[in-house]
Amino acid sequence: MAGFTNYCEDKIMNCFFEATNITAPANLSVGLFTTITDAEAGTVTEVSGGSYARQTVAPAGWTTANGATTNASAITFPTATASWGTVVGAGLYDGTNWIVIQTLGTSKLVDINDTFQIAAGDFDVSLD
Image 1: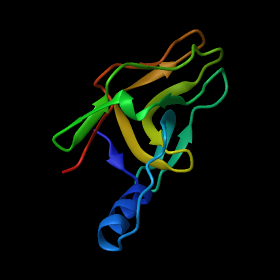
Image 2: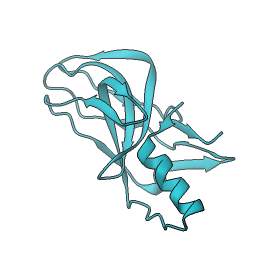
Image 3: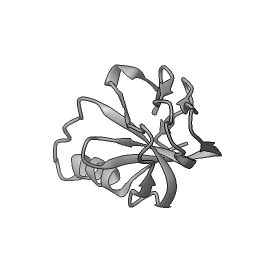
Image 4: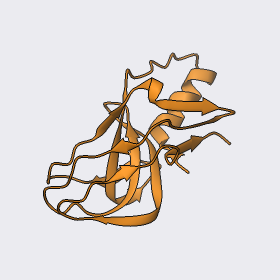
């Protein structure tokens, strides 16, 4: 399960307690991490090089019910043209800030010619 970053939590709190409007991003990007130093602060080392690119998921690409949401279809990253290293987590990016950070259940070494994919229903975000 994913956790909200402090940035996202502050936005939610400000919305409800300070009447500050939240503008939803047009799309969210999914990124991959080789280290997660502080998930709440959004301090991560994102994969880079070797044809890596964040993947955009439109708002319609999520299924939401009962305080939880998940990716409606697979999120497939480009085939690595160099080693990306060991992927330990993924996150949602609003174009400016990481809003959700998720540690993978099992880390995955992504080497040259590998394609990393998050299966439909595997990126879960929920409110307690």
